[in-house]
Image 1: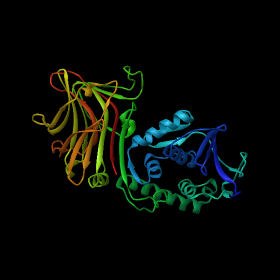
Image 2: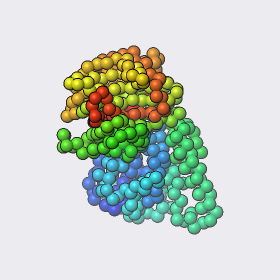
Image 3: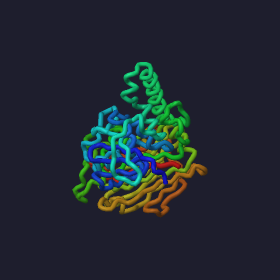
Image 4: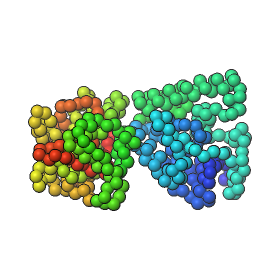
Length: 381
């Protein structure tokens, strides 16, 4: 075993040890998932610099497409673990660590730490990448070197943004030069977080509606409610590269949700590249149905319509899955892991390139519709 000292980062009462991928607070371990740790590492390595969302996503999820929701959840967990004030959000810019960050050396087999000048610490590959993105004070004092580093910074940020949006497999940016080919897509809306904080956009917000974060029925924060007297939808568009990838793979759209009244839906819309696939949830008097849409206008027509009383079970929402087979170009409907319908080819109405959609809408004679979502997830591998 090597006796060489390792580098640890100290900010406030926290110690982050890259060699062990561990975080502690005053000697007590703070448990994080690998992606939560990676998110924190990027922010700490930036040393107080604002890190934009595209850069964070490109470095934490180098081999996958993910929505802003995955990043938002990681930031939320980190704030609960570290303190709300430790990570600052700068609207339309990104995130940064608010505490001063110091680099220290820890001798092998010892918990004692001593400050280490940056020049004396042999950086890892990730630290070298972070150093390129954030020039040291010594470099800043040298005009020519500082100018060169600034040029690299600009190239790096452009390359990182290009990777995140267009799925480039190679770039001149240090942050993405070693990125693996894209292997998966994950878009999800989880729990009671505002969809806007999870990368979704408000679409067709017609009529009066309200969003309830706190669910009094369950005395918890595990779901999001949409209420509308017309229609209200949130969507997360798919980029051209994401659509191309998803349509060559098997994908799955999952909704853990319940309908209080009226109608709701969880959909995926690929624009003109492919049919649109809709899972609908309907109330007709005292009966509740799950439907696969065949036509929306001028009248509703269903490819398949399945009566399922569990649609209205708000206390214990059921799991609805649309599983797509890219060979047969058809999808099958599964409810709580049981196959309920197959051979669904989607429809071609209202293909507006809106991607993953969750929403509620008036239906029949119900004046106000209400849909409760615990989780909406689209994934392709």
